[in-house]
Length: 331
Ligand code: SAM
Ligand code: SF4
Image (cartoon, rainbow, N blue to C red):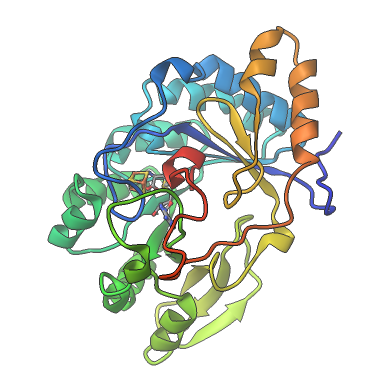
């Protein structure tokens, strides 16, 4: 019954991009003028629930809603409330989301009430002007309000920051002190070549090995085996008493322990974030009321999960390794 891929990896983690739309336009993620998936192709919330439920029946223990911005999908709380029944039954161990925080002040209490315990909030700078520049449309104060509301509701927060050369590399120590000081772990991420953007990724790319070497001038970092089910490798930071994670899709391949697959809001399943191959689950979902066709299509897709990704960022290639934006597959 469980999903095991051709390399013996057990698939227990599903990420669902509930919308590819967003109220921000982060420069490393999207072009300013984005073409989104046609609304008519969207799965309804009921269909998303049905799909997630089949994955849970097939052994998924951890479900992360992402996007685009998951909290801008209309009635998304209805979906989250519905999915929380799998937490109550014990079939699902964790229901979580990745958000830009813009809508958190509105939804934090309800998320906690639905059994959500931890969320990831993406934040690349603590400077309001730089924040507006990198997100194009976002306001730092609104996100800070959201973080306050989430902590007040008892949600554990992990801050995600994409490390961008010349933009926030010098600020990471301050972000680390701030996050750990508020009881939040920080994870830094290498920028990945996904989708056409207006900026040049070669200018933005910062290998985290360099960042780590710089941080070690001010902080005592000790590797620890801590894992949250994702690809981050963690260190303890002696000076802050908190944790710092590194997600290094470019400089260190973590595919050998990959336990996840990704579903888009139109029912396309990507077996790897960094490959083009995908399986359509919308057709089998809609072809019958029973779930047998769907379960077969999922098995067939897991049977094609590739060994890994091979992202490249350099001046010679200067093309995205995969054509779709991160907001389609979900981070
Ligand atoms: N809108 C939500 C957010 O920003 O948290 C969820 C979706 S967003 C695509 C998920 C994560 O992917 C964010 O932490 C974002 O910074 C990161 N991200 C987006 N584009 C990226 C890229 N090209 N390389 C690396 N990380 C990226
Ligand atoms: Fe939106 Fe998240 Fe992409 Fe920023 S990183 S544009 S918040 S989806």
